[in-house]
Length: 200
Image (cartoon, rainbow, N blue to C red):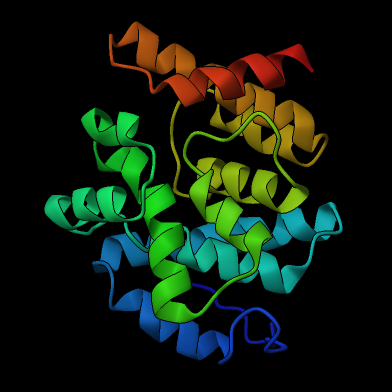
């Protein structure tokens, strides 16, 4: 996997180096998930460069976006309760939990407090009605990273470098359509994202 030795962290968002962050992230997940995280970073950096988003923030958010993805369900439920996160997400499982819970864990365990980075982690799975450019970059990078293989992904990749707003709408529409076509429950906040971005 290609790495990014040219990305030098300033210390403004994470106290240590990119290599140190990678070491911390690697401990939280298996090899397959870790390779995905590195691919998301590559996609995020390309998008960040295209849309003039901080490369450092894009790198940090991408590397930590799945920080809670492989955590134990009981730990996640406990975190939702103790941190007073949205209890409505509990029936939807860790596909939904790991964004908001991951933001809490990254703040507590890694000392990352930048709200834009934390929101990018929080919202990378279901989006939000309003998202900063960084949030959009991480939301899209996770969807189009080079190992993704699903109908429409090539169109999404092309659209991503034409219009960030349009690809967010595209991704939201296709994700919701997939869930509905496969008769899977839809977390209500995902519908809020759909309504907001489709209207754009």
